[in-house]
Length: 89
Image (cartoon, rainbow, N blue to C red; front, side, top):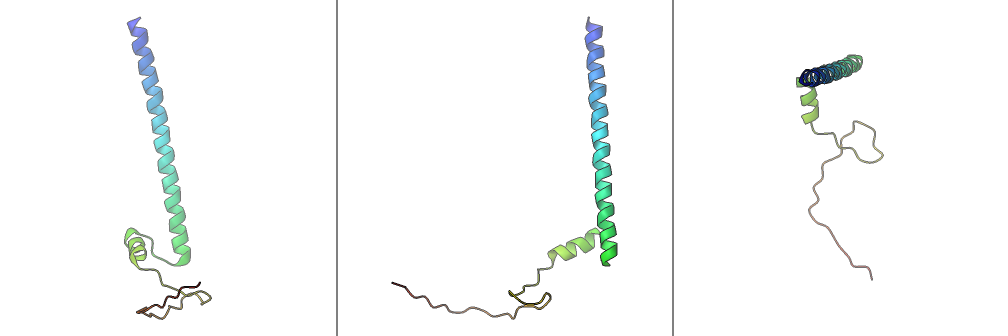
């Protein structure tokens, strides 16, 4: 009886280990596919593909634009120094 329990436990362990291996393979394959897509998109857009280029782009502050302006035109920097407030009855 003890041998049968040990054999069932070993079989269950092997089945779970196999499913874990399959899940790890699927995760690795999907990660490889995602990196491949990112690489192809970067090559098409003419951008470098790598960690340094990614972090350099992410750390650069976004260029502010005003509503109705064309893309790429920066907003003129103006400091607000005073505001006026009125009460409306």
